[in-house]
Image 1 (cartoon, rainbow, N blue to C red):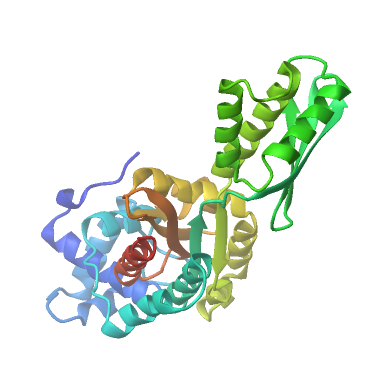
Image 2: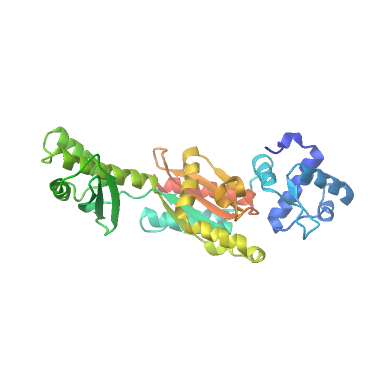
Length: 347
């Protein structure tokens, strides 16, 4: 059942709720009525504030830890705050320069992307994440090995020394001569090309009748190239920087949550699939706690934004991961600026 909207709260409830959430995000600790009553401009007694807090708790926006008389926002409360109340802060000149400085670093684009993400991690005190498309390798050697009557193992060796194996399903028995012919053709005609270039050359030579291979060998090659291309597109590379930022003083009291989060970061493919949601949305995405089943145990939040090439096409996703109590108002514009900086790098 969805929680209430901002407009459904009274002015008093909105004011108390906003101040409480901001206080919690700043300190990481539950906030009590007495603390709120001392804030300038609220003009409510501790008793009145407690009544409002009780109402907000009944709406599912606040929770009262049994070890504290204060309240803290629930994940539903954080979502309401982020979507309807949060006022994003402005980055300082020093923060902007720290991120932009990575663009001026010498070296390949991949290195600059990693360095920029490291800067984001350091400034946000979270772990930095960047999702980059898997590079299309330059092909060096190929091979096909029969596994059964209807399956073959396709082996690709990249010019960088990387080796990738894929199991290919075949419609029927494949003769050994077809395996040898496919391997020979690819090594002679497609070596030194990227996957995309290899597909184009194969199509061209088949179209001109210059591909000196039979139907079975051609089918093997087409299936192998298709499998490698599809797999590369669906397995983007996730780079994580700054995991140590997740183990701060506040985390000492919740080591099990931190352990769960670090375990989740080890499962990079799952995180990569999550960030692909931001790629598809083509806009900033904020995932809070159990809204995504991946973080149901660790209670973590992810703020992610896509970055683009000079044609406006989404190239990858950059963001941070940290506890749900992270400072959204500060980190959201930081991630947004980093994404825009990386987009400039791609032009």
